[in-house]
Length: 336
Image 1 (cartoon, one colour):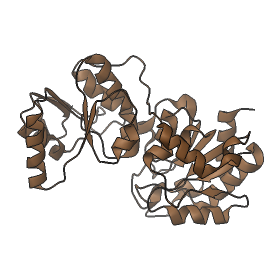
Image 2 (cartoon, one colour; image 1 turned 30 degrees about the vertical axis):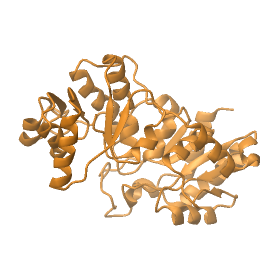
Image 3 (cartoon, rainbow, N blue to C red; image 1 turned 135 degrees about the horizontal axis):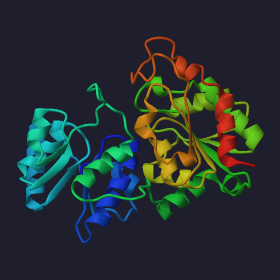
Image 4 (spheres, rainbow, N blue to C red; image 1 turned 90 degrees about the vertical axis):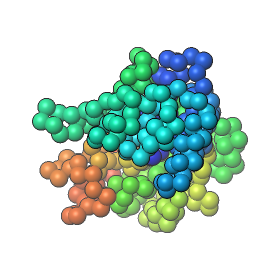
């Protein structure tokens, strides 16, 4: 199976992995994706091997196709839509190559294809990525009655996080909240630091939670700035930033996760952690799944969802979403 590009999409693909494992008992299941995804999925029993995805050059694609040819594969499940993703499996003459086909080139490269979901007027119909990926596995006879996203936590990573947090924070009765204020997509997904700071202070004052700020690579200064804006103390895990394996362990021990619409949101849900997501420019229908343990907060405007990386006007979808909504949503999830 060729995995998607983004962390959140990979998490939303875990039900498709489970469907293949249960629908093809005894098969050797190999994943292909960006190298760091191996740490994200480590510990799951739904695959047997991980292959780093090839580079984009013609030489890289050719070498990878020869590798696949030597593996004598029977099936290639291609979750991303791009035509180039299907080329190595086509060159390797994998007998069955399945995925979505948005254009004639992609359709030519696949043996079995699905048309992307469309509305009656021909426009794209947004559906949960969980359902979108499961539609591909269903094409080869593998489906799930009750799909759930899933991740596993490595004990070594858990111990590393316990050491970084320290016994006082790990053992405190009220627990801690993991706050992820960054997003690799672009600035439009970022909840303003001033609003995040007020929300975090509210979680400290009203819920008794300690705040752990967990940046991804390149987000260290954002987290430090957020900590400076807060009235309450916060722990910033920026030196170094956590690996994906460590971030899973950090989330697994948390009482609450608060995040922009980004990868850690989906990681938290997969680990059973109550999750509050502040969402701006993206369409929530792409990520509507397992909403019993999430609260997705939005402000609806005529311009949303725009899916632009940088807001061309005043970023109203985020600036007008109040910190009080974040605090109240946390209260709903945590109860008394």
